[in-house]
Amino acid sequence: MLFIHIMQKILTYVIQFAVVMFAISIHEAAHGWMANYLGDPTAKNQGRVTLNPIAHIDLVGTIIFPLLLIAMGAPVFGWAKPVMVNPYNLRNPRRDNMFISASGPGANILASISGIILFIILKSFNIVSLVNPGIITLILFYLIIINIFLAIFNLIPIPPLDGSGIIEGLLKGEALESYQKIKPFGFIILIVIIYAGFLDIIARPILNFIINILA
Image (cartoon, rainbow, N blue to C red; front, side):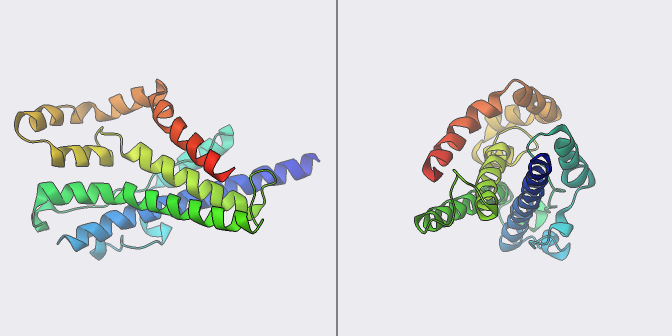
């Protein structure tokens, strides 16, 4: 029984890690695709408009941090190296940067919705179930949860997350200038938000709603 439990645990972490790699790949590829569509080929020329996770690997965020979480027995999470954007190539930098910022979380939300639809279809044929989860169930479950969590996290309007790029595209004048003053403190604010549990307050109702749909 202990051996089976350990193997199940390893399988779960392998699936989580694979899904995280996929989620960050479509996230960054979406940024690069949107930038190229709006006139900046920088990411495309760097090979970032691809679902190949190797192109997006950040040593700390994609390898070391997820492995540390596994060692701690925590859910696997991570990030990729950011996609480079040259605003001078964009036709309307303020507006276009907002669309580029939104495209990453948007891709994760679409992936999550696709996973939900596929789960419901397979559930109707008794192929998947949260009661007795098999490999397909676990893959779809983590595909849905990790992608929606990644989207929610990145939509937090704190620099350098994507939410800040969206906010900057919406604000003007003094409001924009005041908002940009928090950039040097963005990372500190983000750490406070995470450790204070505010992210959980935002994400928990959404994750519970999704689980209720899948149940």
